[in-house]
Image (cartoon, rainbow, N blue to C red):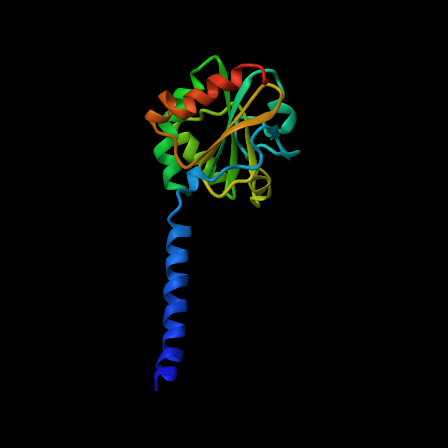
Length: 183
């Protein structure tokens, strides 16, 4: 009789162990996940401009200009992208950095409408219609922002929307670090 009870408990114990494992694993903050691309060159890519937008497309050569560039991956269908947009507009006014965008899996008309309504902070916007380049960048979703130094090395990755505190906190600190020569 005790052996039967023990056999009945095995599946329940296994289920409980898996539930705990999944809970712990899925409760990790995705913004704290390290990126394997930090301090590595940006991936090779060339994206066309978003159809009908008055900004050029984007390629890795555009990120090796000697100055710090913020690469923001966004989409018109992304709620947090709308939330962070005022921060991007503020970043675009800075003369010490350049802000560019990768429009991820978006309809060009919706992307134009989004930027037309909220303002276009980007010096260039590449259309990543199938999301392949976003994956090459190690993107988990949208929005995500990367700080790229003047040599084209990815120095920092921010997962999720940017907020005012980020500009005076970690993200702002990482922009300043990226301005300094590596070493």
